[in-house]
Each structure stands twice: as C-alpha cells, then as structure tokens.
Image 1 (cartoon, rainbow, N blue to C red):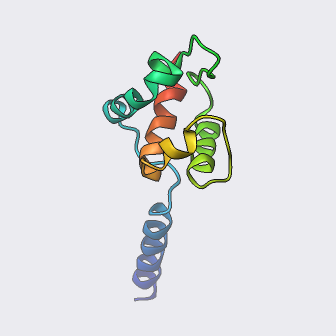
Image 2 (cartoon, helix red, strand yellow; image 1 turned 90 degrees about the vertical axis):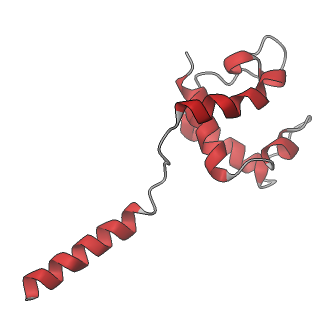
Length: 104
C-alpha cells in the first residue's frame, strides 16, 4: 500500500511540474502564419533590408523575453512594438520566437 501511494504522489508531482513547462510545443505552420504580421517592418522571414533590425536567427529565449517586455511595457521603442505585441497572446509570442529563431 505504501509503495502505491508513493508512486501516485510521484506521478502527480511530475504531472504538476510538467504543466509548468516553459516552452509550448512548436507549431511551424502557426509560427509562419503569425510571422506574416512582422513582414512590413522586419522583412520576409525577419530579414530586414532597412534600418529596422533583422530578427531572423536570433536566440528564441532572447526574442521571447524581448517581445514580452514590449507587451508588458517594460521596454520602449520609437515605433510601434508595444502596440503590436499587445495583439498577441504570450503563447503566440512564443511561437513567433521559435519561428524567427529557426530562420537561417
């Protein structure tokens, strides 16, 4: 009886911790679809040909942190990133981060 109870507790604990996993599963189609809203400023696949920074190939953790900072008003810019990021859920911003981090 004690062994089953301990096993149940361990399974519950692992399930609970897994629910707090940082990264959502990457969905390439969704990431590409969401990235279309970035094309006007950051260029196709995040490869800017203007003064606006290229975001292709940047680290996904850095991208996600930066996008969340814009969304939460912790980072300012001179254009419209704060306004633009507010239109996305945190999960969508994470998908964008994955997508652009995979662009070579």
